[in-house]
Amino acid sequence: MNGPGLLVLQLVDSRIDAIDGRRRRQPERAAFDTAANAHAALLAERARHQAAHDAASRAIEDAERAGAELDTKQRRLEAQLKTVIAPREAEALMSEIAQLQAKHADLDDAELGSMEQQAEAEAELASLAEREPALVAALDEARAALAAADAVLDAELADLTAQRAEAAAVLVASEIATYDSLRRRHGGVAVAALEKHRCSACHVDLSPVEEEQVKATPPGELPECPHCARLLVV
Ligand SMILES: [Zn+2]
Image (cartoon, rainbow, N blue to C red; front, top):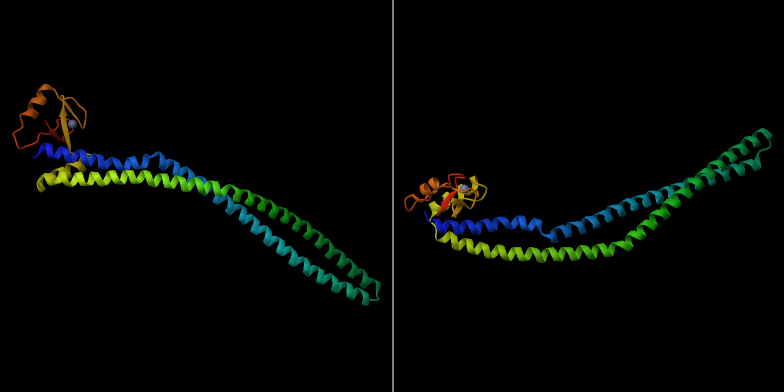
């Protein structure tokens, strides 16, 4: 087993593995999320006021139509009133006309309320339209900053990928297969170094006896850390 060669591959892979986490923890990512949330909140608020505005507009149209129908009915009754002679019949018509007028007045009140709602929604929409450009500009800026930060990591990743190919090229297939299976078993870290009596992966100190056993491993074989079972390069 090529211990030093495996250790180089491990160091490169660990740096590659760390890039995803670094990508997620970038301050530019957090700033972009904040800007995106602020803009999304504005869009949601706009949709809410737009819906209120549309509902008020429909209510106004409905009231106008119903009012026109009442007017038509009233004109017809008034025409009828001119032709009747019997006082009782005239009274009945006049009472019906009064009822129509009362209904119309209620309708006008409701329409006025809808017009107020419509005006309120319009004012809210205008205020949101004033605020939106700044939010969009901030979002664009945050997006560009994030893209620039991502590009730095992408370049680093490309460099590491090239380094990995070089590191893998000096190893044989069986070494890489062992390495890959150990990496899966040990959370991405298959190979550690013995640094001053200590395993660089699990950070446990080896006792003098353990260290002696590790160092007594025949050449060509790699010892395991007695604490975490990773390959240990002495
Ligand atoms: Zn260990």
